[in-house]
Image (cartoon, rainbow, N blue to C red):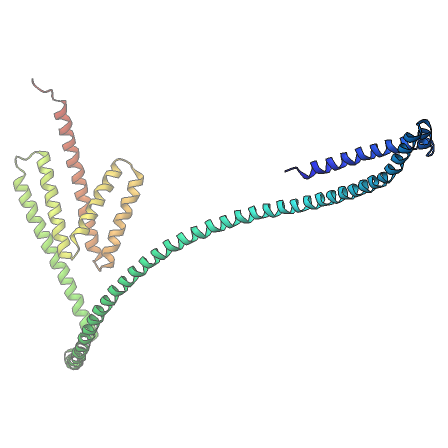
Length: 345
């Protein structure tokens, strides 16, 4: 199939050829104002002149037809050109629509992929939510069972509380009665304030004196026993016995004073560390253990321990710390001496 541009070029070429041919014929038919046919016919014999004249007369109408054809061809050429322009315009519109269609197709595919992804996500989310719902339902069932159990326990406790309230009310009545009886007895047995204070002071003084005597007697007995056993003991053994004696005396004194033995042992350890820190001139440890000792003494005082008993305990702890230091020094010297003795092969 021949393209439109080729057809247009052929038409334009044909028009040009026809124009040149028609112009050549016209020029040849009338080179001198239309006398050409007469001049030629004058040169021909009689019959030839007539034939040529007829030929010229017959060919002249063809010129007007050729001119008419040329005009029609030009119109056709213009129409073809207009159609070409229209076709080009429609072609451009078609290309625009095709590009727009491709763009819409790309957007459609993008949306379709997005919707597919969303559908997959929605399906996954739905499955996950269904699993969570099942888990939550199971948990709710378990919680309902637990709530029912707790409600049963609560009901039993409420019943028990009701019984206890009844018992408490009964006990309150009994307490009220006993309180009245006690008040009556107190009125009968009450002493004057001065007499009571005097009795308490005298009793405390006698108790302190008795305790002091007992402690002195026990200490003397321990010292006597210690002196009896000192014969033939080395310095290390002697210090060990003294230390054992002081620790036993400390425990006995603390028990009778109503002081917790664990706190007393902690206090004794603080005094030992303080003694070492003073010997080694370690000021940081000195401050630390002095603060620890002050804290324990404050705890004793808050518990109502007599200040005299607190001082006695501190003196015993200080004595134990000194004996422990001396014993450690002797043991350290003996260990060094053993290390210096050469080993016999």
